[in-house]
Length: 260
Image: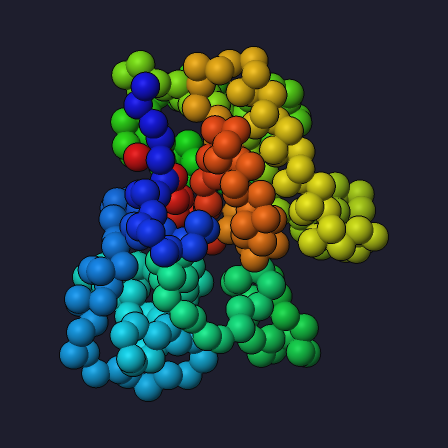
């Protein structure tokens, strides 16, 4: 059976949660990038001035935007700092510089010191839309989609290509405030990080049920790329691999690490 694999097999000595190759989509264009390609393309390159976010390639530290731009041979206007950091870190490169929770926060200028965070990208509806778009781009046919607005039960996305069918459980990342307009501005009592743990557990349960009910399907969990989810995945990746459940990561820019 044809496998839907987001990452190439790892080489000996590479930590299990890191990859020797990553695949992703930027502005509708598909990319494949290896650790060796990054090292080769940056060899002899003079680093620009580092302000906040840096990556170590070989013996040199580079601004992540410069390094990723050269590595993928595409203008940095096509991606943001978080996307560059994420893919370089997944390839095993050391990165430095703290990212604010939300990955898209402004610096607070003009807000009285209050940081505004765009949370629309990591809603369940936005994550599902990104996954569906990515599947379309590589030739998959969408058989069904759940209505996230009505919290429709069942498999969130079912797609097929050739003789392969994939079932996808989609989760967003918890917001700080209630979506219900009747509770607008009201802060949730449960912290997003705590609630994310519950949502992650629900996603795993759904993935396991799919494996039992439709063993012929590929079972996938689609998650917005947050540090909290990355940590939970690192703690469970061996069990997920044993169960035949894959995780796809959706970036703030709509890029999807997964469908191929």
